[in-house]
Image (cartoon, rainbow, N blue to C red; front, side):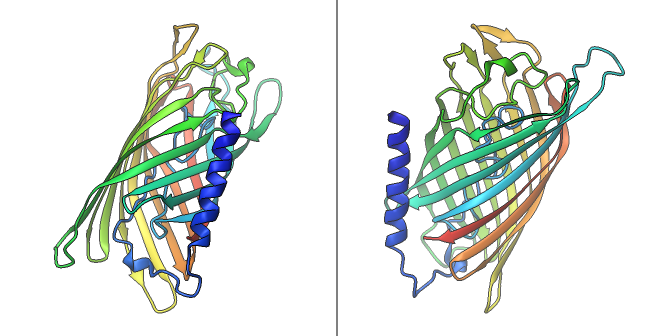
Amino acid sequence: MKKYSFLILIAFQLATASGNGNATNPPKFSSFNHILDAKEILCDACGCSASGGSMGFASILNPNFIGVRYFNQSYKSTDGLYSNSPWYEENFNTIQVWGRIPITKKIQISALLPYHFHNRESANGKQNISGIGDATLLGMYEVFKTKKDSAVFSHTLHFGGGLKIPFGKFDEANNGSINPSYQVGTGSWDYILATEYVIKRKQFGLNAMLNYVIKTENDKNYRFGNQTNYAGTFFYLVETSKFTFVPQLGIAGEIYDNNYQYNQKVRGTAGDILLSKIGFEIGKNRWSFGANTMLPINQNLNDDRVRANYRWSVNLNYTL
């Protein structure tokens, strides 16, 4: 019942925010000096709880919005028993309803609800899993924002926290697989601590983010390792009389602690990855479209038995 109460609350808040909008006076994208772009996925080494993440909690052009996003993550894995052990392809696909809404002048809430459909190859043939994933609620508080329009640089700093809610199914049978993150959910309530910082000068800016995810044990006595996410994204605001365009370039990193089962460390489940990213957003009136691609620069996942190939995403948002 607690899970469904969260869903009702999210739906009510989004409907309220949308109703308060003035459709005859769409916002100018250039006025969004508090650009927030938390481009870091909450992803357990691959994709079972991907809920926002290297792909983001927010939009460059839409500080308050509701939208739909699709992202794909491609990996390959091997058991590593022999030097010539085969590598198998894994694909993690997610369609996500997401939004960011204002509660007060200084407080914003991000809400994300994913649907996953994954597939992978194995020695026994192709495997498919699908279902609703874990939802995420994240609240951010504006600690500081430059108030003088004449300032050479403008700064915005947010701190916040949230929850990952276990709507997704955790399949205990996948625990012993090469990639235990081949799931649609973790089965656990997890806690998020986050910070976002934006510095801008005229049309040019830099967004930096850092968050830490504290993961708990699920009812199958399995706990995914805590996770640190960080990212930096340069952006440039290009405005015309008909649309606004924002190219983006940056890096993102993820660090994973070991998983635990029955309070015992699961060997070979820690790791880290550093990715490059390039993307854009384009907006007209209240609508915006975005896309980005991420490629690994350096990685060490599951004792090098799992390797990331690429990630990419597209999204369509409506400004509230």
